[in-house]
Length: 489
View (cartoon, rainbow, N blue to C red):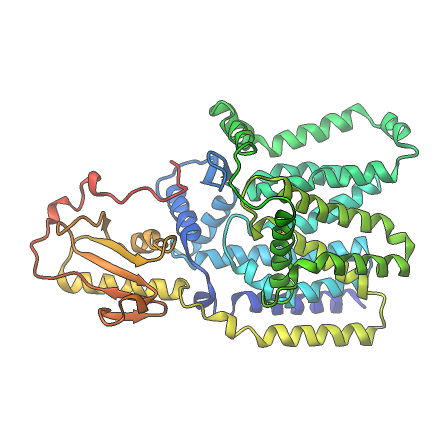
C-alpha cells in the first residue's frame, strides 16, 4: 500500500469514526451533574481567571481530579463563546487522537494488518463512540490504556522510550482516573518475569543518569499533584489512606466476586456490543481464557503479550474485589482497550476475506444503531430547551431573577446551573414567595396534568405571576444558590 493511499484510507476511516461520534450530537450529548460541574469550573478558569491545581472532588472524600481536562475543555469553550457545544470540539479531538493511536500502536506492536483491523473495530464501535462522546474528566481513559499497551511492550523490549512513556502515563493518572493505579505494576512485573534469568545482570547495566532522569520526569509530570499536596499538608494522600479503612457495606466473599465480574462484564458488553441485555456478562472470563488459549496455540510467541494483558485485567478485578468502596462500571473502562487487543490477536491471522466479512457485519450493526442511540430524552438539547422556555417566560413577565425547584427522584435535581448562567438568567435560592419559582419535573409524568409544557423527558410548571416579588434581593449574596456538589474554589 503506497503511502498516499494509506493515509487517505486512514483519513476516511477516522472521518467515519468521527461522524459516529458527532452525529446528532446535541440530542445524543448526555448532560447531568458532572457536565454542569466541569462547565462551572471552566467558567471559573476563563471568566474569573482563577488558576486551578484541581478540578472536582471524586467519590473519595477529599480526593480531587487534576485540572488538566478542565483547561483542555476551556479551549473548546473559548471557541464556542462559552456555549456547551464547545465540549464536542475537545471530545472529538481526543477521539481523533485515540483512533490514530490505535492504528499506529497496534501496527507497530503487532502487525500492519492488526493496526488496520484495530482501527476499524474501534472507529465503528458504537459503544466506544458513545463513551468518547460522554464528556467527563475520565474520558481519556481509553487513550491512556492504548498508550499503556505501547509503553508496556517497549518496557518488555528494554526500549528507553517505554520507560519515558511509563513516567508520563503514571503522572497523568491523577489527571484522568485514580482507578488506573492498579495497572502501574503490570509492565514492571511482566518485565521482571521476562528477564528473570538475567534480571540482576540487567539491573547492573542500568545507568544512574537514566534512572535519575526517569524519576525526574515522573516527578515533573506529577508536579501539580505534588504542589497541591505540599500546599494542603498531603490532604489527598491522607484521605486516600483513610478511604481504604472505610467499609461501605457492600457484598463480601463470593457475592463480591459475582458483583465484580458482573459489573466488569457489563462494561465490556456495552463498549463492544452496545447492550447490557442478558445475565451472562459475568462469565466473560471464560471467553477471555478461551481466546488466550486459541491465540497461544496459534503462536506460542504470544505468551508474553497474553501474560501482560491478563495481568492487567486481573489487577483491575483484584483492586475492586479488595476495595471497600462501591463497585462501579467506570473502574473497568480500561478493559475495553485490552479486549480490543485480544480480539485483534484472535482474528488478524485469519484470511482477509473472513476478517473483512466479520468487520463489515460489525460495522453495519453498529452504524444501524446510531439513530436509535442519538436521541436521549434528558440530553443537553432538551435541557437547553427548558432553559430557553423559562428565559422567554421571564422576559415576557419582566422577572429579574428566579429560583428553580425540582420535582424528581434523588440525584436528578441537577444539570441546570451553568445553562442558566450562560443564557444570562439570574438564578437565586427558591425561597417561598420571595422570588418566582419554576418547577422542573423529571419525568413530566409525575405532574402530568399540571405541566405548562413538556420538553423531552421534562415538564415545567410556571410560577404564579400575580405576586409581589422582592426584586431588590436578586443581587444579594445570601440568596445565591448553594455551591454545586463537588465544586471547590
